[in-house]
Image (cartoon, rainbow over all chains, first blue to last red; front, side, top):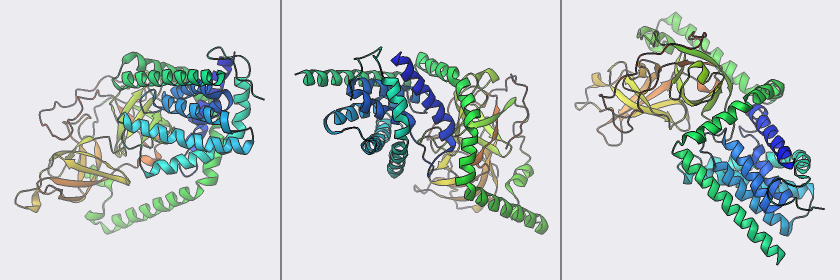
Length: 170
Length: 313
């Protein structure tokens, strides 16, 4: 059931990204909803489950991107793992801290995607523009994070049909 | 102890995911058919949902654009008014050097692939991510006879090539993408070279491969400024599709070859309708060389779509 709920959240996020955020952009930069889901998955579900969910989110997003399949998946999984690991040691729940984590996580995901893309031969992804895109996308995702927390918490509630059981978060 | 075990398990999971991603990257970069098919099926399955979403959320985008891009629309209107004034002035004065691109292309009497089957499509969205600025999605796909590599045009000329084809949609790589190389012919000299857009210079195309600078500095052998540039018959696309007009022709860095700067005839920043020429592309034009022996485009196929007009934006 959790698997289906996560799938539903991912599909809705892709649809919103493909429809709303094609037009709704700030300084020609769109929020990265799938990266936001990846960061929140790491935050809410921990490094193990979070990285798996982030991998799925990246894989779904890769289907629409012109870059090869697996690029966003790998970047998102690494970021979710990092966020989950950091969160376990340092953070406690608060809106501000979640937004700060989402900002940093999105920036890392965007930059990681571009860097990995250059490694596999996708030219033109790494330049000064990357910093601008990463920062703006980070700010936008941080602003959207409070709205995404509830659906992600809903999707992650209950036992997972893959991976470890849901982490008990208080 | 339990924490260490959990950390170790997490790392193993991450390594497994990374290896899976590397495997997918490798097979996708090598054009492994089943991976491409799986992606195509995913897009096709979700296409009705994204279409519904586009209909539902389009007011949001419209409202956003009307509020935050109003200034850009005003600027565009001002530019169009200025262009109209300039055209009126040119007509009144009758000055040949200030003719519009359209009149120039008409004057060259190019056939512009009149006998080629074509499909007209709507541009349904622009770039979806933050790293694909030079891509648009159209509402026609493989069921309309579209295949990868086909030329995409408007009445003003070439705008790009079909990059990815799904059942009912397709993705077009625009000519503004500097990685898209196009075989070009200078109409005034019939010389053929290879060109691409210039990153950071909107509307500029440069032909920097395959053209020799005249040995004797005979200016008659240089292309006329303002003359037309069209696709070459030896390129991956049908011949004689307008690309733009010559802005300048100069020696390149090695002194022996020529670099021709071209003003693109199309503005690809605001496309609404495009036409896909249903001609299978030939082998990719060899980069760095201009081989006159490359076969010309094969004859046109039968159109599989009723909307075979050449209307554009």
